[in-house]
Image (tube, rainbow, N blue to C red):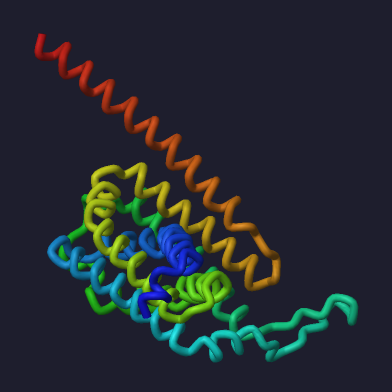
Length: 251
């Protein structure tokens, strides 16, 4: 047991996989936050925690059934609408990714309309999403996000215990970050719109994967990181301007 823990290859595999799982969990965290923000204020914290705990449970269940996950890539239907040279082999993984991508596109578009047209300040108690409805939406999308996470884990680590440990550590980090990230997003409307735009981007990527158009994750995360950097600069500039105006007013 101790020889296993002291193996540098195992330790490196664990650290690399944990870091990747945290990065891959960003989309999950964004979706959980967006859905939780539609709940009543006193239920948002519970929705975030339950959503991320469900994400952890889904990942662990899929890791425990690796053979079943591998079987999801087996074609269940061959579509040759465009001739024998362009046969499309549809698998259950494709179906899940396509469904998840369409749901994310619809959800993000609806939330953008709600945010811009309705406005969060105009919500009344009767218009809040119930905790149960929020958890159901989060649980369904957890399956889609977990597939990507588990397939990455299986491809990078040889030992199931290393995969489980990396996933658990990554989810603990996400649970710890959920509340401060959620509060920050709620306090900055432009950041919330940016997060919804990220969900649109991720939804398109899921559709592409489901249609066998591989989009390198590095492209997606570069776009997200660059957009977040630009928004960070904008927030810093606005904060600096407010401080200058406050100083002039005080003088």
